[in-house]
Image (tube, one colour):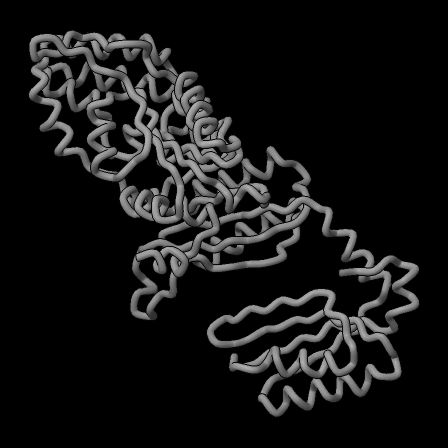
Length: 417
């Protein structure tokens, strides 16, 4: 909207920041802009927010003739007084305006604060870290729904999004401090670049065990086979990154030899979805996203969830069965961490998507390769190693907290119901 500096000095005499505040009502913006139009004012910037029915409107206005500025401000004030609004006018120098224009090239990021309940100390801690690292907060938006006064003591889900500008003085230290706050206050804090891809993600790839469901299926099968403790110990070491996944997987499947295949259906039927899984996938489908399960578990259970949730793709290990019994082997190659990343690339290519448009969600060390290549990689209720290594993490809300990271508010998603 800005002209060049040479044209600027010829066409504009005064720049004013007009701030309007008061009880929100129809016609406020119309009244202001109607006056500005009479004086051929150029609107350089405009922004408005309403908090608890209190309106705050800002207009950066370029007035062509200095001789008309006093009359223009008088008319604006008169119109707004009639509406019961307060008005303040602040002159802006051409140098300050030019400096503001030059700031638009700076990087922009989104910091998202998620918690069961957001308190003032959470906001104070997060905004202090943001400030200490030289970032400027341009906008703050509450994405979670309004809370009744008699429910403020209850733990539900809350989210506030900060739009920030600039580069942190030390990006590694900045992330480390946010991670420390997450642990100290039992909150989640996401920090992502604000690019055109943020609201243009189109594919979400999920791990299955301990991500979509609150269980490790191989452990459930092992208990049915009477080798539960042995397999659980190996599973935990593998998820912590202490053992090679393929080697540990082969050991665990081998211990299942002789298990009746009839057990698989009963295990599938008792699987419990993790909090928010059904709401998340249902919402994603309504918004036109594709979804996939890419798992180091077994296809039988992935396909069971596919039917239940309406997932588009399932890739997992095929448990080998002969004469109604598990042989202790799998058919085909084992899906490990690298294979998960390859499958993510494959699905994205099939859907005609860039990797920046893909979200990956997982909890274990074997999920890190796919989390690292996705545009948005999220560690969900993950092991410490995974949480520290992933770009983002959610540990205190359900899976549907991911909708907040995409910028969707509770109001947005309610419209889909």
